[in-house]
Image 1 (cartoon, rainbow, N blue to C red):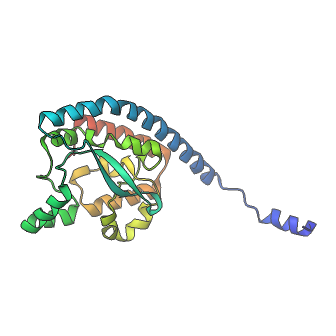
Image 2: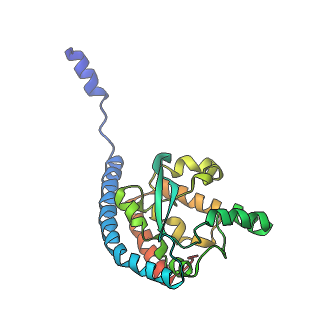
Image 3: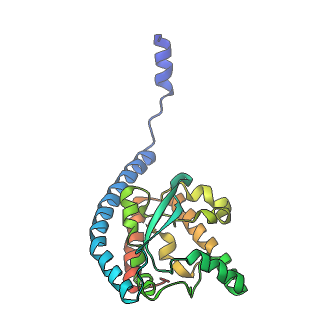
Length: 228
């Protein structure tokens, strides 16, 4: 390589801006927090597992404790999200049946992608959802790096089309165990509203915002506000 080529290459190099460097460091901090929280959550998951199993057995429910479902991850990759099962084992089939039999239920689900008074939820599942304990196994996903502590909502593959123009923006970050959608309405939000909040989060993300959302999430969970 000639001296002139070396000079040309040196001149074209641009040092990353301070904002880019800060964001890079913030992502590292975010992952470290995820690892620590994921590890702690998995430790707490052990006694919680036996408690949930005991509650299920009391109700005569001996089906699998965990519920695994494909969700959309960062950059559109699919991963298997883990939750404590709070519904009957054949929940998807029951949903199709309910929507065929009841037009109001169909309209509600198509608008919100959930049912306010979902008849598929078991008695033990009502307790799990009311206390948000059904989400606890997702600490495994956080530890594995498939999810993050705070992020956009983990969407179902079938919801991709409904996400429309928001999809590409939302998948730029890992889905979160908690998020902006959870502290600004949670179960009271429509599907589009949740998408808009996730877009707002991904466009304006910073580590300080994560801490604020985390503190608000803990408060909401303790008050059992907006859980279904």
